[in-house]
Length: 495
Length: 107
Image (cartoon, rainbow over the protein chains, first blue to last red):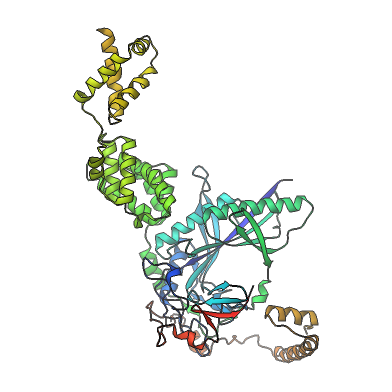
């Protein structure tokens, strides 16, 4: 039997506000510090720890950021939305309920365009809703006791719920990347998955191809990287098909992904939605949002990743793949544009420079960033490094091998490209007067091969080029050298 | 009227992480049933044209739908510390371990 998968994603994005959603406690560590460096409970007060008699007051920026997310995903913005209490009993939640939104969320019914592969057609994925809510605290379980840290309690989140319209792990990955790009371009979330400020739960079910009704769904909780989400969904689809084909039934449950074994594991049977006993929070009056506010936010909307990507393709002639990679984060796209600007000022053709820059950023530089887990803005590399690197290779002053070496030096020390090139003697010899004697010497040393070349065995050209490279310590300009060797081989044969 | 069974009482107790004896299950099942009968009396009132009252100042709020609520500006108010520099909230904690509230083992 053929099966098809039905996938819906719930993304929690932490909003990049300074203070929490309902009180003035810091919502995140100071710049350059990580969450782990903040002492437990240092960012708490009577409000976010749920003391009796306290009242929440809504942070205006949370409303603005949620609306921006809604506008960017073509949602309709509700003029009136309502906070509700989601009741559950667990020590990460001091009040005994989470303040969230239920039947009247701030944004509804939007969509996002995705491309599962650079070559696939665009697919529109519906967004069911975006709502505002507070995060819960963090529990650490030890032997015989548990510890509660409420620094995260009350940190503002938006939850973005997709329609169940994704049909493969690749589509789910593309949707997440696209959504991640949107929130980071808007500047409303840092989107750092390792720090937990962009988290994803996936609802996965399978059904016989063509069947209308959905199969029983399983929720995969809190997977913390795009790649792991894809792997977890792939595994879950295969697991469910296996269960059904083996005559079994899918149990509605919550599972977690084990990234070491690449499997999903059952966590607990899911409580029914009714068990949360949602009701409107009487401490918070409905959130009225005026047209004027929505219009002001709409006018402040920055250029979104889709538009930047299209611009890179049409104006600079970049491939869809390069354009997608360069626009995956706003920082990388800005870095690329600034480097291109610096490069254009040196008189290099924009399209040519753009292509070469894209190659470096998606290739060697991308590899260094991935390996170190550093964001480009936090690395030692500057736009000047990249512009210099592209310029010296396009001008033929440094070979591509030499340029890679220069990049690796600049990466670890921050030294300028011209300085590294000078210090390591990476400049390639492009002076014919300097190369000619070396070429003649090599040809004279291999008379047999020279004769074979002249008799038509042209692939021996590479052999001679290699020999001269060896003799000159790899510094000869390869294009120039190839031309010169071919010319000399013919000339010396004629004489 | 909805029937409260002993099984339902046990389920609610489980969700609230309460451990009940059989005597308590019997007792609470009866009491919950009584509460529901009381709610039934209230539900008998016809409220077809009455707006639900959720918020104490709902009438003022409804009178002017163009009015936004009083928001809080996104400004940090530094949390208070105790005299020894540790977070003030921990003063109320019965047990503390390495700056965290210590509670009975959860999992």
